[in-house]
Length: 506
Ligand code: GLU
Image (tube, rainbow, N blue to C red; front, side):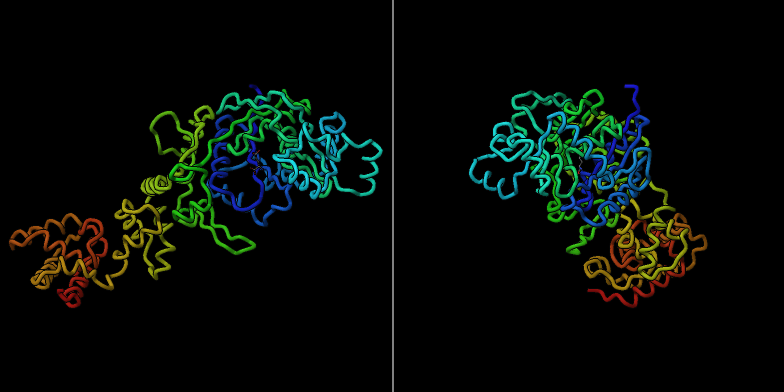
């Protein structure tokens, strides 16, 4: 294909973007960049009933946070503007008329009540070739009657006229040939006079055509719409420029049974949205990956592998590597289990990879919250010592508070186990030893302290455990002498003295 690749992400602003939608956007982006193509953001807001204030801004903010960038869109403009369907109303009417003129669509006047009555009386009622002749539409009414109804101001819809019994083939890059019988499709509503707007199906096809979209990459839930879309392309005579389809596998519950939903996140305690979202109506807050402490690179890497893999075991990939390696052919057909633990693992990996100075900057506000005011250099040093113990930046405080403040209390269980009868005298002696050390590097301290332990015939474990209790307040933390090197001699001695005074053997 010599044509420039153009793909679009076409969300409906009906609420916060679900993590599955983020994956769809990501795959579109990777595919576009891999093929030197364009990536377009089109907002499909033709269903005014479902419109939610703030959803479009949320989508843009979330994808920007993740580094998923568009070439054209509502927020950027572009040669095919406007990109918001509600701003394109005037465009669609013409295409509705084309289908009406061709006899590929017809006008229907059935009121919601009439349709309801029909549904109640006919089991499995479907508005299609088998029933349309019993309904109130331009196929059963005369031209004059139709015109009269319109002139009188009656509301109507335009329906797509689908011939029964045809084979419709959807060529899908991921799924191959998917065949449908047109008899299963109903005569979908393409346009509603009431709001002078097309429905999703018509607007979607017309815009993909006008915006010269070459590939439609979207979630599997849209596969059932694909045969209808193929028929629409045929009806318009656009079959030659029809985009290629790729329907991405579903994201499944962590247990693998069924589609991932917001409820799974609530039930298992993980976010299903990229950013925190406050429902404008109920004020209910849903958690987001950003606010939960995920690094955007980790989220991207995690999502990239939910439904695709590079064909080998490589797991850690930057956005640039993903772009190089991505292909739709390597996407899987079967659903991808949403393994949330793996998401945490990715975050852990990215924290380890990120320069300590950058992590220190992310940690800084948390320290401020805890009333700590120290240099970034010091924070960077602490980060280097404890980061391997955390999955999230916010966990750093719990793992390192003793680098910044002396313990306020001593863990009772540890006291019981580690603070022996002779601990106070030994710790007093140790304080003297520490005080005498000139070169306070971790390495030198270790040599001096261990030499003293050996000379005295003390038990290494007993000394070091009591020492840690005095400095940290419990039995955790990195290498003891790395801690004391960081907090310094004076503070080390002070904490030993406090511990001797405060800890009451249990
Ligand atoms: N507006 C649809 C959505 O909300 C677009 C589906 C498609 O990509 O065709 O996902």
